[in-house]
Image (cartoon, rainbow over all chains, first blue to last red; front, side, top):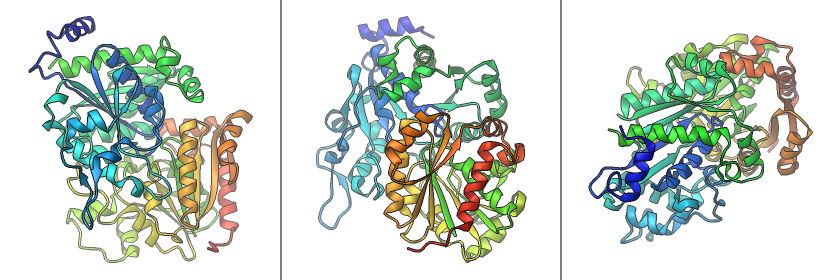
Length: 279
Length: 247
């Protein structure tokens, strides 16, 4: 299994992970209960992988705002994906002629730092998702047809799922090969983690990486493991830098690159690369 | 009276729902607690524990698997699929996602339809909603009397709460913002700055509630006199004393 430095070297020289024909996709979805830290981990992981030389597509399928801040980009006023869809008179929403997964990434995503592309489902307002129905339709077309795009084969695709098992259950995360299941030391978070891990392993054939989050002390990790009924793969510390960054509306990756939480996400990136590239 | 509890994931919806349901039950009200989240957790804060919560049958799956004859009435569903929690509270889990669902997750007996249909005359129906505003946006105007919008003092939770308030107001509901896990004046000010136009009830950060969540217990069972629990009991009394929805 190549170490991180080796992966970076190979990705930069194009002789390894990014070489034509190499199946170098990192398809990751971050899942867990609300408040466990999914968005912070997803956004920061995307930034870390992008800095390591991956071309990163970040998928935000939450109908509430969340991922933009930890990526370090402003929440777009209008959903970029709306432009990909059209609704013929009396018909249903569909992709505009000539628009497929690759075109969606190049034309209907938002640019984030480090070359990251952000694909967003669209946000709900008081009328629910009705105002962004076109974007929802395009989003589903995209995730179900993602394999068609040869040019996306070398991208790292990272999805931030909404709280709970609904999206993995509905197959909205069809791109996912590895679920990063984020669990904080509470009973509700652990039960959610158990459910998502079981769904991913037993029904979706995906690999699971269990992460204990918001760990304040060794007892926190032990509590997560006891409530989950199995050991976790790594832990992310409870870090005040996250709260500060949220209050200041900036990405923790930009505001505090040496914060313990960012260091921990670098270890998460190592684990993710090992699990997805090493097989 | 029909009450729904909404907010961002992790804001404390389930803890608020479970504790108010128990308090109303303890005070002698007939309470139907509807777990309207496909990731059902309400059993834990009602005091059933993690394992029994995991075993609760969900209405939709019971019907879908054909293990049971079609149940034509909501009251029948309550009878057959509901479970008893302490203080006389009856819990009904609307739906749970255990398997990849090739079809539409919105069909069959949905949380919003079920919550809107349980008879609320003479009893309290309390729905613990899924994170975000999806279920609320699908509720018909007039089907809910009160929406409790739970916000902890984090920017994203406050933004989700703002959207939930808009969604509830558009459906003619009385809205009460539950400012949850408030540690200091700065926390409360962060919530007031965005949601100050609404009726606000403050629940202070309470280590007993955190401990209950860590251990999978109902806060009201761990310490019924804890400040956070007492504040939720008082909110329950206030709801019970209010007249039903006036439209």
